[in-house]
Structures are given as structure tokens and as C-alpha cells.
Length: 349
Image 1 (spheres, rainbow, N blue to C red):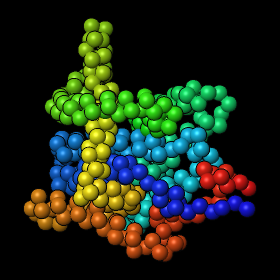
Image 2 (image 1 turned 180 degrees about the horizontal axis):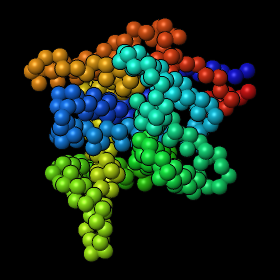
Image 3 (image 1 turned 120 degrees about the horizontal axis):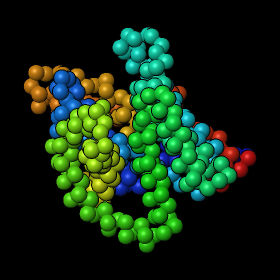
Image 4 (image 1 turned 30 degrees about the horizontal axis):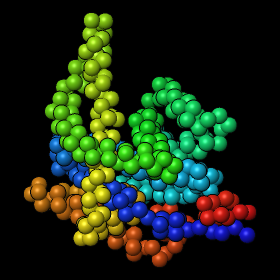
């Protein structure tokens, strides 16, 4: 006989530092969306917006990769678990969003090209790429590279925000996986890497301030140079491209290292370590917070705090309230019992 594993049960063995990092990331998601409500005309230039968007999704996706046990976790069972945990909530809350907005049109492009709650689909597809890479006979690293290039080819022919998100964030997913493997298999290297991340506490603020000050002007200049291509400008274009790469990948890596060290400090403080409780409800906050982002009052600061409190805590209260109603918990948040063929718990059919 095979056991049935509940997705809540699977999350019971939690890493406090990881939960604190997830809490930091989801707080940044909520805060990062508020400037779009307060300053709809020019929110993309807002300091808080740029700060949150400089790290929150790379951090989330890195952690999504980090929690995977490649040796025991990349199985059909794990794929099914992520189908329920990610795609079912995505479909449910996409439909709820349409009902709330009274938009009953079926827009295929919106659903598959630039979908709402894109992080859930990105996370599922990232695991699917990993699953395929592990199952194909050739070495996993080579398979990952070819699958990543295949996504790049697809994006070349079909400009899709979903494909773009995979191209941009999948490297963080893979990075999380390999950092986890270092922790398990090469502890000395992992410990040295942890020490190295302390430098990121200084590097991240420096790179962020630089990017905040100059990135927009560099982007405009680069676009102009590309349109009027001239070999004389090739060095300038290369420099501009390096700055773009730094913004997309290098700065977020510094941010992950910096916040990892901050999370370690928080975990040691009993009064602050309760922040890890938020890390248990990141999915619920992610899918629900947008419903509570409104300009409730004219005062900008007061409106900011009202939106922040409501968007962060009402989803948790709601999740706790319906946790006993299993059918709703399954449909809304993907908490479901799954029959395993071969799981880390040693279940065999």
C-alpha cells in the first residue's frame, strides 16, 4: 500500500531561516505593489518600488530551487505535488479575479502570454524543466542548458512575458538547487560561500544606489545606440549591456546574499524570529494581497500603512479560517493529499 502525504505535512519540517527569507520577500512584494496605487503615473521611478523589485522575485525563485532535494525530490510525485500546489491556486484565483472585476472574457493571450499570478506558473514550469533535465539520459547540467536555450528560441519567435520571466529568473532557480547540493555534499565549500555572502551586505546597497541613479538613463541611451548601430559605439554598447546584466542578475545575487545574512541575525533574536510565521503563508498572501490595495484615504502615508496591514494580514486570517474546510483549502491554496509512487518517505506502490 502507498501512503498519502498531505502538502501541509510536507511543509512541517521547516527551516526558520528560509521562512524568514520568504517573509522578507513577500513583504517586499506587498510594499512593491503599493506605489502603483499611490503614484499610478510614475510609480516605476519610485525608490521603494525599485528597491523591492530589485530583489523580491529573484529571492523567491532562488528559495524555490533551494528547497528542492534533487537526489530524492525530482520525481513524478513531486511534479504532481507542484501541479496541485501551484497550478490549481493559479487557475482558481485567476477565475476569482475575473469575477471580482466583472471581466468574463476568455483572453487566451492574457492567460498564456502574460498571465496573472505569473510567479506560480513560472515556478511550476521551472520545476518541469528540472524534471525533464533529470529524466533525460544525458548529464543534467547539459540538459538544463539546452532546455534554457530552447526557451530562448521560443521567446525569439513569440514575445511572451511568461517566457521572458523564465529566461530572467530560471538561473536563480538553478542557483538555489546547486547551493542546496553544496550544503548536502560539499559542506566545506558551502561554509566558505556563506562567509563570502557577508560582503554582499555592502555590495548590494552600493549596486542598488548606482542602478537607481543611472539605470534608466543607460537604458534609454542603449536603445538609441541599438537603433542607430555603429561599430564605433560597440564598446559603449557592451558597457551598457553589462550594466543591464548587472541589474538583472548580479545585483539580485548580491541582494540574496545580503538578506541571507540579515535572516540569520533575525533567526537568533526570539522577538524577531516570529517573522518566520509569515513565511508559512506566502502563497496565500501572494494570491490575495492585490484585492486589498486601494487608496482608502487621501493621506499618502496613512493609505500606505492601511494597504500594507490589510494586504499582509487578511490573507493569513482567511487562510486560517478556511484551513478546516478541506475542499476550499484544496481549491484555493493547493493543500491536498497526494498518492506517492516513490517519495522521500520511502513509499512504494
